[in-house]
Image 1 (cartoon, rainbow, N blue to C red):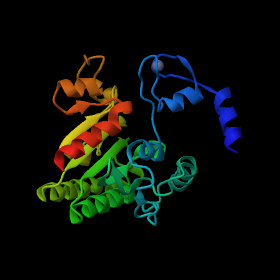
Image 2: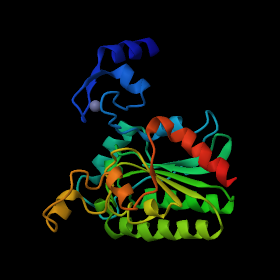
Image 3: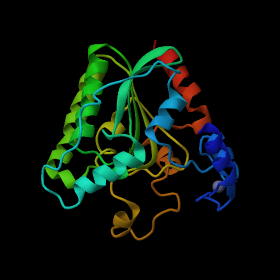
Image 4: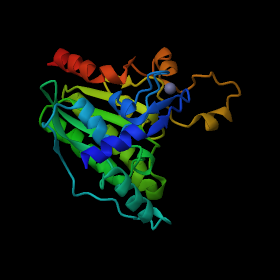
Length: 263
Ligand SMILES: [Zn+2]
């Protein structure tokens, strides 16, 4: 099975959406899905992100028994949940748990853009809140890795209220004197940006990540001239909305440095 996968990878190429370069899939995966020509950072799944950041065999997953339902009977919602569960192998839409990074115990929540665009419904909000509350109770640092299309419209107000719930949990964690690192990846929009994502004591973005509240097309309706790098990490760093930009290849070692510093 492994040999079949290896051959399939050698035979396949991907086209970089940044520079249109053709890259062998195996090379691309070894480079953690970063283009060696233009440095574009392609999306990683939640489990790929976990493997990249967390010390091997230290992760214990929490709340694997929570599943989304369709409380508003929104058309086709169940079929989308089923489709993306198969695609991401995440039946519960947000990967949460405890693990070690450079030997430091942390609580983590990691999003996956493949699950209904990384949108936050009531299950993702509840799982994130429980993760923050566990971090507070156990006096551990909190790390979130965000990728989000905003709050999930199929769940209406039940999704929107997750903004206040997660933000309030972040405040209680902070008031307990505990450290929160928010990592933001491409794309992160809407209510996620307007709640827990922006409450990190350190907010780190990957290069060229698109981060905002309303998307550029909505903003363009109000402001006629938008700069080319509007809502990109580099633009947000210039305007004080994030604290730093860290390349994916250095992200794990950067986290270890931060955690060494606060411990
Ligand atoms: Zn490229």
